[in-house]
Length: 408
Image (tube, rainbow, N blue to C red; front, top):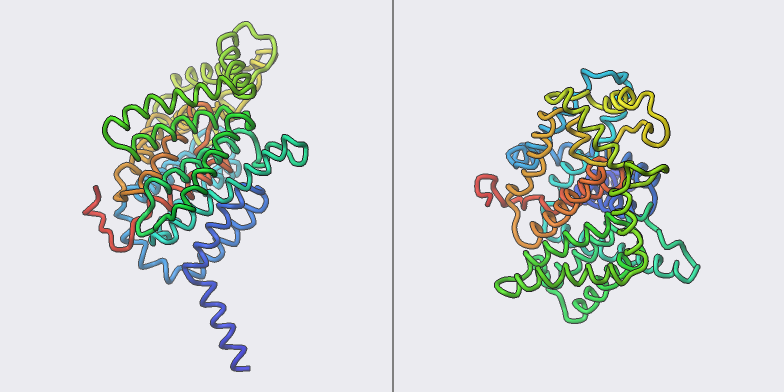
């Protein structure tokens, strides 16, 4: 009996350990490629495990409060909570919307526990491996054996694959210390990056993926090279990608259609992806002008938009709760005050005291999401938002020895 008790105590200690939290965060990160339901289940298990680990997390919380990202994340949470106390939306609905922002807690938790280089490198390598597996299944889809879209939708798949290719290139040219990359591993990472890029260009028809790839390619050129080589690559690499897009029937069709939809939306008779975005942006800007400082409250955009398009017929009268622009959505619901806090939250990552490959990996993905969020709400969506918060939480976590007052 005593042996069983000791084993149970040992198991409980392991389950309440920080490594358990790290593995659960990694598992949720991988599940984003697989299943939304699995992600939700893992998230419940994760938050339940946090309760058992509070004793070990407590000593990390106070130092973390001095970090710019943690401070601005808490400020954003406060603004979101204040947005619940005004606007036309029922309070229960506002609670549901606020719970959709729980991904910010994933960011805070990852910053608390991913303070060792080994775990950062492990997650980065797992991302590359998972993205390559997904890309292989997607390529097999051209033969009819599997779907070509294996990660939720084409936009999400393109963005995830772009990050995988970017991470592979960073591991080759700027391996996180003290990691050592053998020549064989370099070839494998290079092949993986090429496989992922070619899938984005020739298989996955996602404009968000194209934009993310262009941004990440630019960040890679800036961060991985120096001197005239950097200048040359900043010109050559985007041009090479544009050339590939023009040679790809899939990419060329998606990009041409998007441009035509934006140009001719005023005369269009039918719904189109980019055409309705133009209408949503125009209407949302007009709503913001009516209540610029504090907006319509959390979730209040839908009701305000409903009144705005009342009496309109056809696709232009569709009621929306997301204008497919993260910045317009934040401003419409939380006003210019909320937008300033949100921009401060983004800016805080630039002041976080991480360096080297971790900083490059984190800022590259953050900037890619900032770009795609001009056309979508990728900070608040379930899949892309969780991915961003988990990734940035891991990459921007300060080592235990780092002090906030020594931040670059």
